[in-house]
Length: 287
Image 1 (cartoon, rainbow, N blue to C red):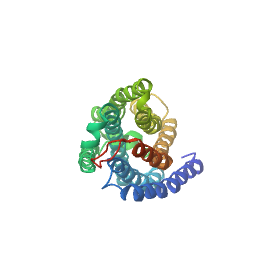
Image 2 (image 1 turned 30 degrees about the vertical axis):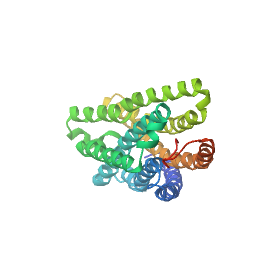
Image 3 (image 1 turned 90 degrees about the horizontal axis):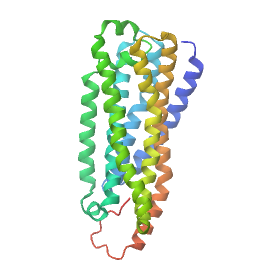
Image 4 (image 1 turned 60 degrees about the vertical axis):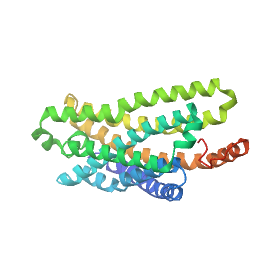
């Protein structure tokens, strides 16, 4: 590799930033998972981000030690799992925010931590299923150590795996997220008397969604370039490596965004409680 120093610096920055931040968010959200559905979402995201970024040294090692195929396969499978789970969680979160705006009363009565936890378990299961289904192929997509292995794999299966990653882990979730987001934007403009309930979910989506899709877009771009075999392998290897590093930085931005919003969320809850005239259920207010 011709860029070990810069690549090493970026990996160290992502690791040293992401691990403590995600541990802190994991602790904060973990203290509240039994009280709010919102905490369940962020707790599960912190767990996935922590698992993803703690294996960054293994990913870095697999780029430079070419005979560690098991390390490349393991780290690539974990990368795939994190991508699918993040996309599924963002989709569920966007629907959750949309329901908060459209039916706040119903959401206050039915949006419970146990329901959110069951949904998280289901998303974990789906993510594991997609990751293990093509576990032997993920390494061939964006690994510089996989040139010889790629030649031994079924080309059609590799292309199918690339398409599944892009469709299920990026394009379809993006399309499903845009519709609830547009609805929340429209609600924020039309329901001036309920602006406090409409803009808060909008800020959550406008913060988390671009972070995920912009950080993962180069990953998918280089996946398709990798299987096209029409570009120099050296350039593809360099681009793929930096695309992988960018995905780790998304796990650093998520906890920063959550911690920034946490203080605002507490003020929001206080304003909501003060403005409520009738609230006998004691359920969680709209977030």
